[in-house]
Amino acid sequence: MVTELQEKGVSRRVLLKELEAQLSEDLAYESGRILGSMCTKPHSFAAQVYRKYIEKNLGDPGLFPASKQIEREAIQMLGSLLGKTDAVGHIVTGGTEANILAIWAARNLHGGKQGDFIVPASAHHSFDKAADLLGCKLVRVRLNDNFQVDPAAVREAISPRTFAIVGVAGTTELGVVDPINELAEIAEKRSLHLHVDAAFGGFVIPFLDNAVKEHLEFDFRLSGVSSITMDPHKMGMCPIPAGGIFFRDEEMASAISTNFTYLCGGETVHQTIVGTRSGAPALATWAMLKHLGRAGYRKVLKRCMKLTHQLVAGIEEIEGLAVVSPPTMNVVGIKSDVIDAEILAQQIRTLKWAVALFPKHIRVVVMPHVKSSHIKNFLDDLKQITEALNR
Ligand SMILES: Cc1ncc(COP(=O)(O)O)c(C=O)c1O
Picture (cartoon, rainbow, N blue to C red):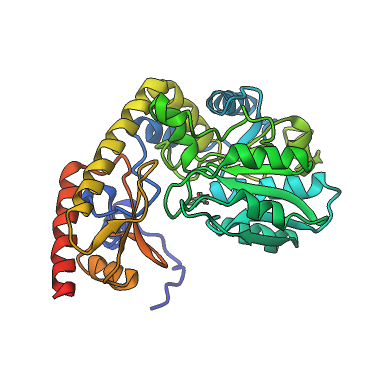
């Protein structure tokens, strides 16, 4: 049925009722069935701030200079987690926009030539979008046995056309952290831009136990790192759309600047893809960071990791199932030697569990909305399915 715009308006009450009825088919985080998403229910305080400041437009910062200043402060706080309070960045629409911005800047910094950039085989598909949009070639290179990019493969793939390397700190499929320190060395030696996609891991690694994160260097403390993606709308518990792009310095960020004067606020500089953009996500991010502080985020992550270990222990007890690799963060790949991942996903989805599917495994992300009882119920269903399929 096609919905055409009607001549006469409808009352708010009727429409709210209609929306509620129609939207009841959407999954809700509270149901506990969403186990495969990297997003979660926004924290109630972040949602409150977001709603209150819905009209702010950071695309016209001359009109909203105070909002712009709050965005700057949010970037500084996030920068302090990434080892550089004076990193230059923006709260953007998500990890996809942030990754495209990084590749765009790297390409322009290298004379705008339409060369190649190298990404791990595990890189998010936003880099395919970046390559297509920017007219560049993306070169995917192999992973090692731990599902990290193989630095030797990166070295082999570098050619005179290469302008950037990408490393991932928290891969989409398994939450694996690439050897960013080795990539940073390569990048420095070959004068290449190194972009670190920490869209998910950026809000995880800084809050892991010291002994664990010591081995997971990924940020501006490594001098070869040029830019980082880190998304508040994933483990930061901020409302969508809140991604984060960070450049080491203004020169890099200004490689994608457009300057113009027609807006009411006068002289304006944009360093994002979108023009008009809501300030609400930036204000919500600022409020969340201040509200939870480092201790609050550590607590959230500690709980997620505890449940992650509960899940892993449960998987190991189910005959025919195994985890793909011991999880570094709250992302778990589940595989089977006897059942095809696609069939496993199909069966578990029939039981109304929302999990992600990759070629050889299904993925669970233990986000803040997940409870111990959800994991237990999920494990019970997984056990039944595998037993039935094994029979
Ligand atoms: C590592 C990584 N980078 C980038 C993205 C893209 O983020 P978004 O969906 O916010 O655009 C994702 C999404 O899951 C991701 O896992």
